[in-house]
Length: 181
Image (cartoon, rainbow, N blue to C red; front, side, top):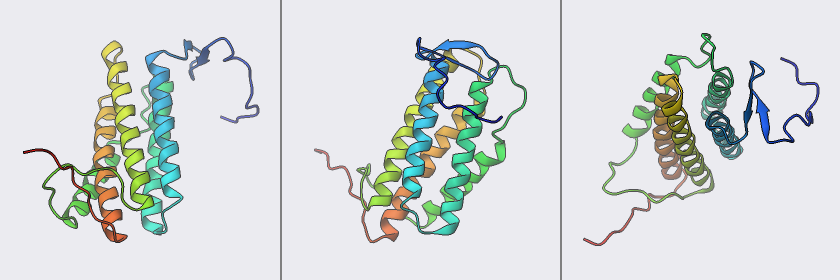
């Protein structure tokens, strides 16, 4: 696909098109889900701008590719050609284990924040949860791909673990939620 024109004016009436040329309202659950994936991907790109570790940067850019693949599948609702692969779920699970082994155990919930990179990853994580909720809402109305929900669920765990690891590695500390006992 080659994008030759950014402004098409075809969305000026509140609709947008899927890959199969079907037009949907911009508030349709499928379009909302695609938008949430885009939002997440933008947060992730913003986070990457703080990353100086080349291996981690590569991993995060691969995740951005995964998110484009997931969004592409959402834009092609009748496709049998899956772009997002099960191996990417296993990649996230392995990375979560790796980071978790390097972190102190949690006693309480952790407040989002810390050093800049960690804080940005927490924003990406919360964006991931929003994307997951949007896809769950879509798949309550339409048949969906189970891997999408699993991937986003695992990605939010990955981003949480990574945010903690980045914060501690960068000299920060977990700020725990303090609640009345």
